[in-house]
Image 1: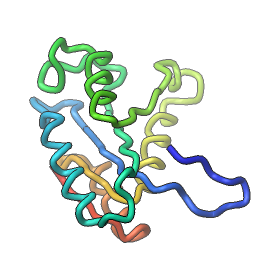
Image 2 (image 1 turned 45 degrees about the vertical axis):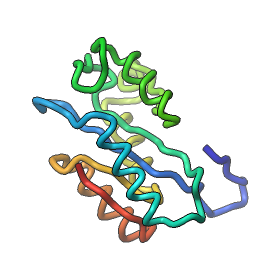
Image 3 (image 1 turned 90 degrees about the vertical axis):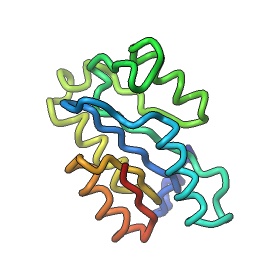
Image 4 (image 1 turned 60 degrees about the horizontal axis):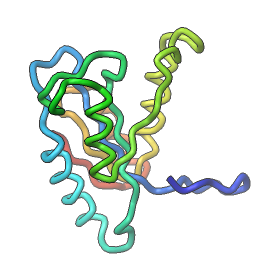
Length: 145
């Protein structure tokens, strides 16, 4: 992602993708998220064709089953995301024990809230709140899956 000048008040542009699976039976395949990303990019116009895609997933500490990847591991999921040219947030699995149980959630919420556009999970309160913020603060496109 683009870096910020210490004196700048401008956030770098990025599209946030919020994949929420905890407690759900299935999640949409990455191809569905990719299609929504293309739709959002079209809505944003040609001004930012190489805008970074930042993926947040709520189950980094859980085992991801093969609805998202071929072998069921988080490493395989992250590898699939990288192959698509997207970025995942590398959260230390000890983040909660080091900084408090709400720290990972706060980091995710900040990343989602300051995005230029959002692809969220329709059954996630977190995605719904982030969608409101992105639409209101950035006037950016929002798609739910």
